[in-house]
Amino acid sequence: MHDLARQLEAFLFLSPRPLDPAWAAAELGVGADEVAAALAEVGAALTEGGHGVELREVAGGWALAVAADCEEAVRRLAGGERPDDLSPALLETLAVVAYLEPVTRAEVAEVRGVASEWALAALEERGLVEQRGRADSPGAPILYGTTERFLRLFGLRSRADLPPLEEFALRADEVEAIRARLHASAERRRR
Image 1 (cartoon, rainbow, N blue to C red):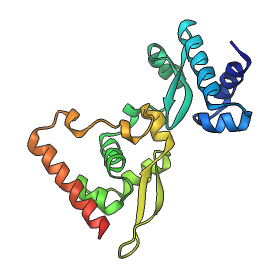
Image 2: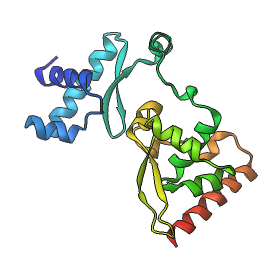
Image 3: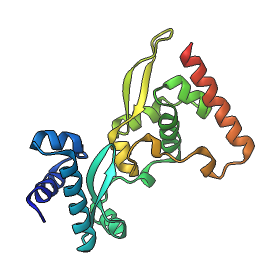
């Protein structure tokens, strides 16, 4: 591998956050195209070498991640948090936040049909949601949104990678009910 690729690989290995290529280019005094080529070289070397890690585009940057065929072994060895470690209530709450963000606690409760204080607090404690300021409405309720950790945990580059609601095998009437709730919450937020 070329020196720039090796340097980026070392940084990716040590960094707790995805590497922003534009930032790396500026910090290293090289062109964006050179960083892109070096990242491609790192990715190819990992893939072709049969390594247990691979280069993935997540959360607006690039990061080393466990290769898909090694994930189960790593989970057993590390006992780390996985999306399936979240209860159905937490997953449901997280989905509402991800699709609506920024969203208030009341809006989450309205969509879910149950109080969501505990679920939001648990997700915030796990670093999957965070406070994003206050709504411009009476009482100035706290707005919640997903975090970079959420994107990494679910292997998403951005929220745009969330699947459409139709992919959840819901009946048409269920999809329409959810869309109506989302639309009503968005309308109230705009007022």
